[in-house]
Length: 307
Image (tube, rainbow, N blue to C red):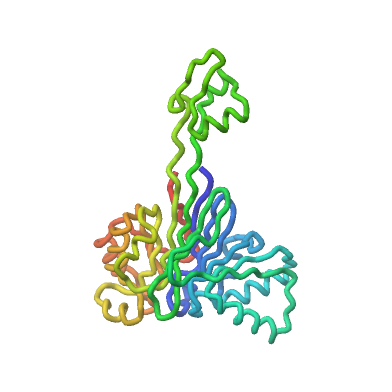
């Protein structure tokens, strides 16, 4: 099975700590890289993890709080210094263009590549990217400023024809396409070979949801129902529920509830408040609420499915 993984480049909340950078993740899907948020220090983390910046063609910014995008102009500048000429796609609140344009203007930076901006729909779930194998959706969250989360949904692959039938009947390329699309195979004498007999069911399509800064709200789970791997910000323990709600963030209890409602197969949490220098109690509480939850660390790589 081709790679579908998430590398954590930053897992702290509003400010970096000595061990955690601010929010950023790199999604690797079939060796195509998608950068999700770009907090301060992201390009250093890319280098530390030996992830090539040049392979990043799509950057998704959930919202315009500094801990989620202050590293973006630095990354753009480095790409320019390294001689990039290929276009770069940025999906964000449309106001990000003004921010980047101003910084490039005052630094008198002339880019050798084009930035193509894709404004996010901050009110409804929307398909923002699609190719032959993947769909990416944005969905609205409830934070202090307009914010989106992102759903990476693998497209369902076609069944594979069993090698024994390929060898025995030697179907043409066109016949193979028909079989893989669900048609039965008909021999020259009219004998019908049922499609189910000739093919193996493909693995279920994989999915990953990135739930950025938000307070818990009813029906949030509907945006990524049945997701395989769910990431939620989980800034506070449950004893600080009032603080979390006032700051439009989630707690351990909120995250576990959201995972249950969305029927997520796996849950990982991050965006921890800097007040938690030691996450031992945080982890114990999270495991009591949702056993098996992954508390992410910078430089972790998590596979969407462990095959």
